[in-house]
Length: 358
Image 1 (cartoon, rainbow, N blue to C red):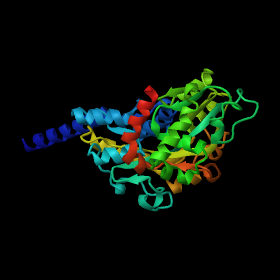
Image 2: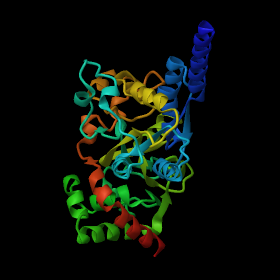
Image 3: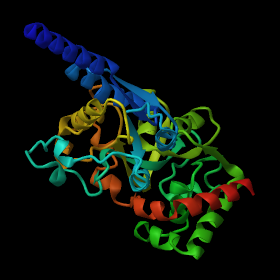
Image 4: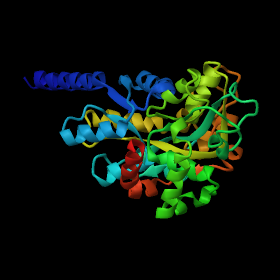
């Protein structure tokens, strides 16, 4: 009887483990070229190594989806990709789980995660996925002389054509001030004043009738490809993918690049929590982070991962010149201030939406 009970318990545990593994996890990202890169560099290797299925889900606004699921008490996603300002807000609101740095992989040189990650890359509720940039991208065939600076984006006389801008105040307002001559290290000081906000909106107003607004990252390269815009703000990885992966005749400008990070977070009450934590630990490995650059032009957030960055998946294109973390590309960059947007995001979004409707 005892042997049968023990055997039955063991079988039940094995079955439960198998069911848990088969249940797998879903990872919600912003999709497009980035979603495909995450699938190749994270989801597929994770599933192969652990036996836990991992599915990437595209969404144009993962933080909003996460918030809606948690507040409704119906959490279906396991891991979400969100931006830094969203990490601060979601953590403050108690909508995401804490992440212990001790669960993350050590550095390639044996250093701890705390020592190896770049500044701002670790948060009590999140860990950075990669470093990316919002840049100016353009149709190389649209101009006799290529644009080289942010001011060119607002110069409709010398660089005619429609402009694409992300439909949110974050990135749009910073670019407006950069285009109006504000130095990168002064942008948030200026934007913290009523006069600075007015100045940013005035600069956007100067080209408003020539703007095509986009919301999902995949739209920016498509607008260029379709000839709907001659120049657009875009995520550098999306533009690289279109240029090198699809052969599009695009170019982009590093001047005024807005550097930011995306982060992994786990929603409060997520199902299959153990598998979600395993995925984040797996994805934190420096070699895995460097491997992402094989598929898209985003830089690793760990110092020890940088030496392992090699070529694109075509085997010939060196990736370092295309990464926002490469020193020469970051010389005139703006580092996004997540704290600023956590404090002022709501009021500026309200004004931005009212301005759009006006």
